[in-house]
Length: 449
Image 1 (cartoon, rainbow, N blue to C red):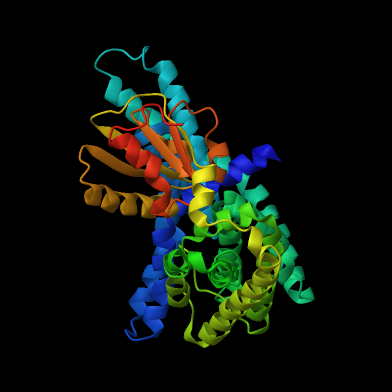
Image 2 (tube, rainbow, N blue to C red):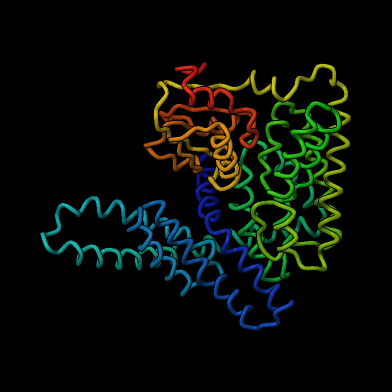
């Protein structure tokens, strides 16, 4: 189970870096049948879907496993997969690229000292060419049969769930996994490949809506604004970031700090999914991030009403239930600032540096960490702090030159084994939680708390 989780997490990371291509491939058919009325746009979408994206995924997977040279081998392996089995190319190209990248790295490390002087380029080029073809052949004979069986099995299971009307109840699995930061793992590693397969027969897929629906998170945040008046000002920005920015991680800490809110999120998600199902709603491609804006862009006009209704209903149900749950202990609630001051843990082991490199970390380094980094740069300008470099990165790409790591408190468990000073906050996008870090950068609090 642990190995399967690592594989899906790795696969979701590769897909996440290709999301702009998926979005483009989904938008082109809309444009070709809409205002532009150009058949070449539809042909371009097919080229992206069945050639460019699989090859690029092979390159990215090869790069992750074997660096730049591994990326070249991964490209060759993915090209071989596309030529032999275009129907499953999107799924198999990343696997073939991973094999090629891994073999490339291991092989070159073993033979580089045995290559005669002056023949390095010749041996490297021949090795890469043969390795790419070998990985493509392995994918053809070993991976394609397994992938076809798996796709058929999952596709039949999905069809059964849709026919029996039980697909909305997948929220019992989705929502708990989301709040422990497996949202990208679910969306990119599971729903996206199956959604692409469903699109081939139905033209759109409800699977692209199951995790990206911003309704439950919006309901949780709105309930806090309604129940706790002192939090309303902060909730306005959080609501905008969550629903329009598509950064769902904003509401995760509120559910984790009060786990009784999880049933409210699940109930809202189920109702929203049921609304999507009975209205026949679906998206033409993945919506990433899960913003109302990207969701509506990726939807056909005939599905707009059903999708909006599903989002609004899920938000309303979640908000109502969350308000009822929180109202019972309203008097015992503490302010958001007190929660941050109580839970914040700063583990600085070095004194203040003149030049600091701060890395904001999240699952894939493209969502909450990117937004938090941008907000923190603005805060640094307001404070007049110079010499501080701010970056955002995925959890498995933290560089050796990082001086400080910043992540959400509940995400810190994924950074075990990393020997870097770590600053944790309840919410990456809430700048009120960075007082200790700013104090350290200004010269106060030598070793943190």
